[in-house]
Length: 175
Image 1 (cartoon, rainbow, N blue to C red):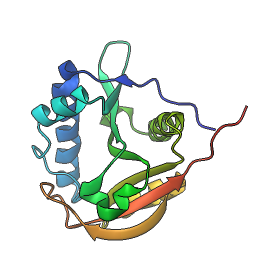
Image 2 (spheres, one colour):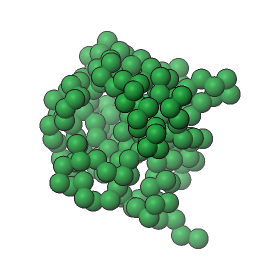
Image 3 (tube, one colour):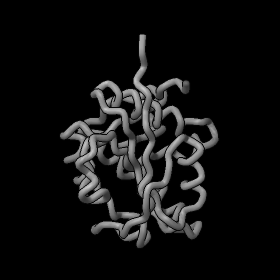
């Protein structure tokens, strides 16, 4: 089993840093022809509202620089529609700062989300990725997610037109 990341709950004071990291990654995606995120489409005010609901978690290094962030929610009707009735830990906005890539932080963050999901008695993780992002589709498949279906990207996002909905069943830990 992969060790969980040292994530902590984000506060409103972290919203600017989280939105800034997302914009950095969005700019990189646009510059590299990846239609996933668009700079500016996820403002700090929205992140602040989500942190107030306890949805964002982050990882800072010893110098307090943001290393990674992730949003974990328990319902996701915008992306999953009627299938949202299924209890799951929905992963959104998994981000690793570019200078920290290649250190296997993604699997640790996914495991952190799995641990929180299992702690709620839920045995299913879900996420989405751009349908035309073959690299992320392959990555999430390697992390144990299976592709369930493709659907239209909901508003207000506009980085792509379609997303693939993916799911991973979690095995509860027994002592």
